[in-house]
Each structure stands twice: as structure tokens, then as C-alpha cells.
Image (cartoon, rainbow, N blue to C red; front, side, top):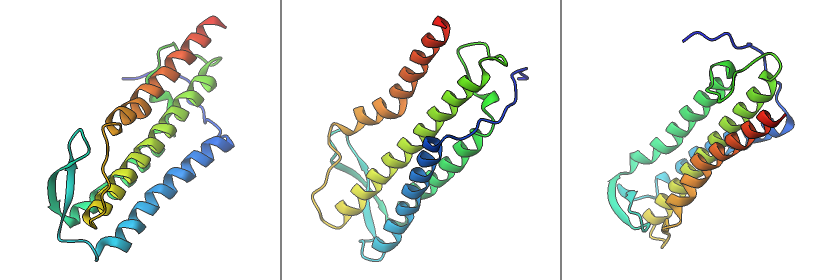
Length: 169
């Protein structure tokens, strides 16, 4: 689909840089934490938790590397996507006048989504490793609603709120 949206570079604000750095640091720490603990773990580790946070699936421990790897691929993919805000989806017509404002909001939402994904993956990884080491640590019934709220609903609410502000200007 070809669009005639303006192709402009969105300058990063200090907040944007901080969010990207925090996200990259979390991804790096996931690799480090896995590497530090890997040799001490049993060959079979928890790999799935039910809605109550109880272990209901187990896998070979090499599966632990999937979370940091998927986190890294997600981070890089969303980071690259933010270089092309003109291809993001918008609820308003993008013009020269409103492009920067809408592109900045869209890239910020993608950045926060990237951060939330990294946080969720790191919490799951930490829980898996701690549980495999025999510690009583469960992802409670709070985990799924928090993930849905932070990673899906919050960006949508922010986007809709911002679009209403745009229409009233």
C-alpha cells in the first residue's frame, strides 16, 4: 500500500533515548542472567504456567535462551520499525502539519511496547529460573491482566486520547 504521507525523521527526545537504553539493558541482562545460572539448572525446567501462576509444563533447559533471543529480535524489529513512522497505522489523515506530532506519538507507543515486552520476558525468565532452582516463586493471577493492561490496552488508550486532543485543536 502506497501512502503519500510525509517521510520525515522524528528527532529522539531524551525520554526516547532513555526508553531505548532501558529496553536494551533489560535484554542484555536477560542474556547475562541466563548465562550465569544456566550450568546450575536442572536439565528440565518449567516452561509454562497456568492462569494461577502454577507450573503446568516443563521443557529442556535450552529453551531458556528463547526468551532473550525473541526479546532481542523484537527489540531490533521494533527499533527499525520506528525509523519508518510513515508506514504506521493512524486514525487521522497525516499531513505536513500534523505529521511530526503523530509520528512522535506513534514511535513513543512502539518504544513503550518494546519496553513492556522486555519487562514481561524478563519477569517470566526470572520466574522460570528461580522456580527451576527450587525457590517458591509463582506468577500469580495478576500477571495476565497486568500484561494485557500495560502492553495492549494502555497504548491504545493513549492513542485514542491523543487523537481526541488532535481533533479538538
